[in-house]
Amino acid sequence: MKVLLQILKWLGIVLGSLIVIIVILVFARRNRTFDAPFPNIKASTDSAVIARGKYLAYGPAHCAGCHCGMADTAAMFRGEVVDLKGGREFILPFGVVRTRNITNDKETGIGRLSDQEIARTLRYGVGSDGRAIFDFMNFYDASDEDLTAIISYLRSTTPVKNSVANHEFNFIGDAIKAFVIKPMGSTTATRSLSNIPDTTAKYGEYLANNVANCRGCHTDRDLKTGGYIGEYYSGGFMMPSETDPAFTYVSRNLTPDKETGHLVNWNFEQFYNRFHSGAQTDGSSMPWMMFKQMSENDLKAIWNYLHTLKPVKKDVGPVRIPTQK
Ligand code: HEC
Ligand code: HEC
Image (cartoon, rainbow, N blue to C red; front, top):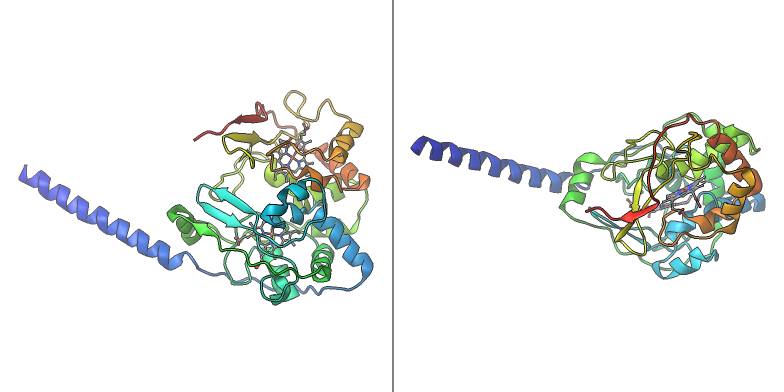
């Protein structure tokens, strides 16, 4: 009996110390910083470049879908050109993340950042303060031309003063920052595909993977790390409804599998019309209203690309299900 108590006592001390060490490590490491190169990007005042940037920001790259103000969410979903003043909240299991003000305001927006700092955030996922930023923005392999266009557009917008509250993390969030998230960084060599804005599957691949983030939502992922756990484009990624957290949306299988592929019975006209209607599925995170702005050319390219994918048999079930706790 005495021996058992001794063992328990030591076990308690060891466990207790481990917990203390973990807590100390989490607090020491949660604001760790990373290095990444500064891309050689410089904003332009060319009106064609700015127009391309605006098209991307309110269309395929859907910056506005996330960087509008909280109170402008409804206007954004109606397709209005809302200010990119930030503050839209994402309530996640590990905390509340708020989008930043990306208007050109010198105090509260990107007016305080250089073109290269903004480009580094978009390409390498390293914030201006060196933190690894959460993997919301999948523009790591957007081309130099497109990053230039987007930043040129942001520089051309009216500065809006709006200081967004900081993110709030619980202990799990701090632990993720301390040990899990790393800058995602540029991963593939497909950037150059943007130089051919035609309807080919190649350009579609560029848009779908590097700009519009179709892959990021239509592939199952681990919510804690952001890592992919399903086969690309086979769907099944669960996203809590933005209007009613009791429900969750399940992204569709977009691969051309004959039985389970969502698009097998669609023709291009239906695909185009679905996008062109812009009809927002209430509470779904797919920014239909932004994608509505996409040109017929770009939709055709994406359509062609989706049809070159390897068919993956995966029945993702109903589109809207009760949120699993
Ligand atoms: C899916 C939502 C989403 C989309 C789309 C999105 N962002 Fe973000 N953005 C965020 C979130 C969330 C943060 C804060 C991340 C963090 O701090 O970890 C952020 C942060 C930023 C920052 C860092 C600002 C700073 O103060 O350092 C910049 C710059 C930025 N976004 C620009 C853009 C641009 C440009 C686009 C479109 C090309 C875009 N974002 C699209 C969600 C999004
Ligand atoms: C932020 C996450 C997200 C992004 C980005 C996204 N989707 Fe979706 N998508 C969803 C979800 C969730 C659904 C199911 C709910 C709905 O219809 O909105 C969906 C549904 C669909 C549907 C079925 C619509 C219907 O009416 O049956 C198609 C087609 C589709 N997405 C294609 C795409 C393409 C192509 C892209 C890239 C241009 C894309 N999605 C980007 C999350 C996303």
